[in-house]
Each structure stands twice: as structure tokens, then as C-alpha cells.
Image 1 (tube, rainbow, N blue to C red):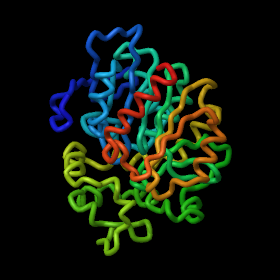
Image 2: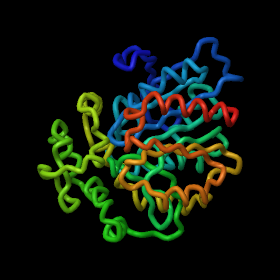
Image 3: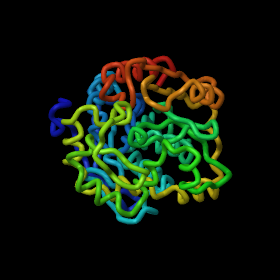
Length: 333
């Protein structure tokens, strides 16, 4: 497993019981015992693919964990359905449960970044019996709850519970302008424009939330998602369309309805170990966010990296690998 050689990882592709085909990396430790050794399920965000975890997979496997990192729906070599409803987080969670079925794993430690953090949270609510523990990145808040910040602002995601009151995305954005990028990504034209500008994304910024314009004074923190140009170029070489990735932003009302109909609880099943990772320079991470996180999860461990922003797996690759392992040891997973 050489992070600089993606082909050196163990690649698999499976047609799931949900009818979708997923590509994933599946690394099994030496002398693996499925009855004794835990599995870590890594869920990437926008706009990434399995290799977002390439620096952590090796250390975790060498520590004795099986590590599975899929290309999420719409990304890489996994299926890329066109319609937004296919990206319902209830359906995505069913896909993840099916991946665990395919590899004969009953329960897993789920760890997510960006959209993957939000998906990990919902997987733990839809399938609590399949979760050993949850690792997420902390950023942002809305009505006191953590929200999805996807690409640097849409960059990582913390936890926010299912809501009982619906609010249109445009109303939400008027109250919290920092999230105007979500309106852009949810628009019908964003996919094609992103594809046309894929090579110059780091030199573009959104104007009024509805188009891309050349950036004059770039927000360095906002662009942490693209901290290494070579990483971006490789990511984009694996994602031949942006329709699937942006479809996640088109599920605002779909997610609300399925969570309301599903009567999802506010928090994970009692006793579920939780670790939150936080970059102090991640623009919207604040003390208020930490207070709310602590209220919802008083027993959770929170680790703050003072000199890091959004993409912790790249900025603090060794520390993330080490700190997750230390926490797993502490909680007995």
C-alpha cells in the first residue's frame, strides 16, 4: 500500500443487493480474524473518492484493522445515476450496509469527512446495529446544531440531528449567507460548469451563489479543500462527471422527508463511542459548535488541530492516523 501508487491497494467492485455497483478498496490485515478484528469503513466527501484516505489506510491496516474505502455513489468507478433521488442518504446508507454484507462484516467503525461525515452520521441512525463507533470532523453550526459544510464550505461536516421543521434551502441561505454555495451546487447548471472549469477550480470563486467568476482575493481557508494541486488533479481525473457529486446538494427536501417519515432519533444509539476531529482554522468551527457537540455527546472525545483547516487527512495525515488509533484503543474497539 503505497499512497503514491493507488494501484498498489486492493481494489474490488461489487453489485450490491440495492442494485447499485460500487467500487471500493478493501485492505485486510495480516492474519485477519473476522471474529476478533474490527473493520473501519471510510466515507469520503465532495469532491473526492476513496483515495482521500490513502494516507490513513496503511497505518490502520498495520495496526490490525480491516479498512474499506468505497467510491461513494456518483464518484470514481462506482455507479453514477442521474436523478437526485438516487442520492437519498437513506438509500446511500442501505448501500453501505450492503457493502458490509458483501464482505461479511456485521458491524464497523464508520469514519467520515465532509459529506462523508454527514453520511456516517445518518448511517449510524438508519443502521445503529451495524455501527461500532463513529469518527467525524467538526465544523459549522445552524440553530445550534452542526451542519454540513461541503466544499470548504463544503468542506467537512460535523453532526447535526434530524429536524422536525422544514425550511427551504433558499430561506436557509438568506439567513446564513456563508452557505450560498449550496444553492449553486444544487442548481441544474453547476455540474456542467464545474466540469468545464475543473482544471481551474482553485482560481475561481462563487459570485452571489449562482455562478463562477475569476477570483481576485481568494479566501485561503475556503480553498483548503484544494490545498495540493496534484491532489485535486488526481481526484478530478477519477471523476469524469460532476452530476453525481452535485446531486447530493439536490437532496435537501428528500433528506428531510425521509428522516421525518423514518422517525430518526436525535443522536446515536446510547453507548456508541464518538470521536470528533476539528481543524481550528476551519472557517466556521467555533466554541459554540464545540458546546453544542458536547451537549449532544457529553462522552465524546474532541481533538483540535490548531494549525489545520478543513482537509485533515492531507494536512495532518500522520496525526489523524495516530489519533484515531489511540482513540480506538481507549474505547476498546
